[in-house]
Length: 253
Length: 160
Image (cartoon, rainbow over all chains, first blue to last red):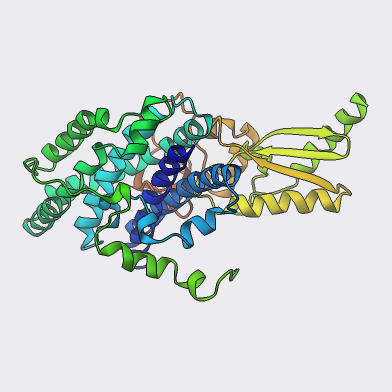
């Protein structure tokens, strides 16, 4: 049960942290249509993370004396309790860096949810099937932007190349399973994340080819996020995200 | 008892027809296809709904509007259950709903079985000569198009 809780939380956490990052673009997108696009994608991500947190809360409340809600899971857990991928907490940087981060994550999410639809856990299978429809649009949109920037001007090419180089070390973590992912895969609840890597590389390579971007060599991989060991950036994200509930406990809208 | 239940179920369906979608008020929640089932057990009425999009902010408003509509009409014991599976699809939108959308200025979604790359028809001048501006529009369920003939931009309810 604990591993299922950890697994469900990890899925909600990656989405929530990327939501918080992307939301900072609201009102600052390069043009109105793209401002709307990134915030719509973000709305899908927060909706998906609510579905995961609601399910995690039911599991936690059924198995312990704790009483948690989707809100307390988002607002009252500490940095070490968050299991999000390191990729999702990386800075927005410029538009190119935000696009590359979204593209890497959306392609991963697509492959993950595609397999999770067959999970023998009906809750996770249901969330996956629902989310997959949304993520399909995110993959298309972010791929188009990778191509536009990579095969664009000298300036955009420089920027996206820099972004790829910056974020590449955080991609390997997606395919290195944490203990709870191994346990869940063994029970047929979760896909084996290592098995997603080939298809992920294939998709990224094909979009990069069209964008005339060279795929980086496999180098050092940063890990830890899935087990609560984060880059220093997460603390700053949480202090923004959780400020209100920490300062005015139980404040409601 | 069974007969009474059937009458109540029919009454509830009729009442829900009067609950509009808060973002596209020309559609009822039945037109949208988000009400999946209605169950009546003694005095308990259970409404099973499914969200259009995971993050659709209208869902909370819709839940409240359903509750209010039923309370107004004398129901007291109301339970609203949200289910994710099977996932909502625009194929569940009624034909009448699609006609209403079009009149309202939003191009209705194609059926998901239609894999042709035909573009939506401009709801203003009916031209088929349109172009995509953005996959994402003013709400999660819409994309933004423009008509090449009358030049008007318009929303397209995305096939989902």
